[in-house]
Length: 167
Image (cartoon, rainbow, N blue to C red; front, top):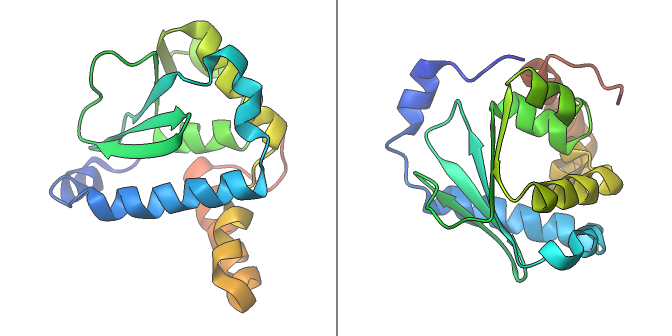
């Protein structure tokens, strides 16, 4: 899968993280409202803290399920229950079920550290939700949702190198 060009990643480094955190946190809340049972699948791992590191971006995410919260950080702190790292394209494709996480892990395009059971619970929760991030984003645009969805799908497909077909 393609990666974010290093020059673009370098240009993103000095940007403040708070606006990104507010937007992504609101987006996560909206996804959870539209998919209310998504985090129930975590079971005993509902209190786990997950680090998500796009390897081609100068920031990372901490995702917590109880209470639902997303934080954007420059570096992942120690003490997280599990950490997942991959290129942004691979992470997006994983969320939408467009690639096989096992295949990415065995090809060393996906790194997992920490509590493997918690990561598997998270993966199962996301897989069951069958998220379509382009549709989720488009829902924010009201009457302009359909043209926005097509634009987001085009951008996603270019980034992930995939068609609209799910695997």
